[in-house]
Image 1 (cartoon, rainbow, N blue to C red):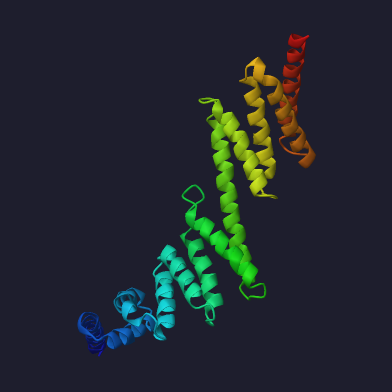
Image 2 (cartoon, one colour; image 1 turned 30 degrees about the vertical axis):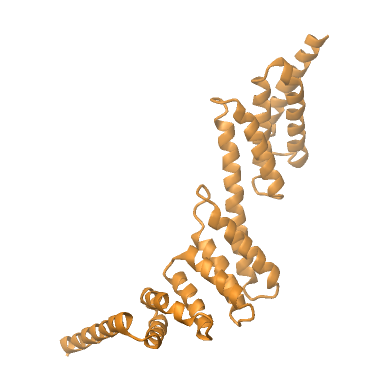
Length: 272
């Protein structure tokens, strides 16, 4: 009986596959549409996509196109083609602004780009798209049942971009021994991070490294350029102390301040 049952299943599968191939290759547009929906509803998304690709030109401008566009987007999502899914959910939302599925499509578009978003050190294109999409969703649907989830993903994406900016700035600082121009690049990068991401969780450490970069820049500078750079470094120290008076970096920062003050005194002696 077991062998008979297994044989019956194999026959069904082969019959199904044969039917699919027949419709795919020689079926009418209507037959292909029905088979595409059948494959979609059976969670056979890859097969559904092959059929949707064939029939889409024939259904442009027809009532079925709304359903087709949504199923194409969702099939790509389930096949983990996340960048494509985000693009197709966007198109669906733009083409059918009055659809009952618009809110769902907008959320899934953002979620698709979120899932396509790579680790922080790689190309942030999909991360940026996801962040913008979730922000748009949050603004457009303040009462959505998906709001908590949208806010959670938004915070994760924002943290990823903050971390990328922070690591880039640190890289400038750590390579400045080989190229002193990178001290200036690090200072600018830390300033941009602190300006672009107010309240960033990297603020304390960014202010400290901003001070270190400014301090080391002074020590590498010629006398002619030191005066203004010393002032800038002391301001960086004051900003760190003002924001984090009990910072774990304060002891080291106090030593840097003492060095800066000594450099300033020496400059004044030279002037006098």
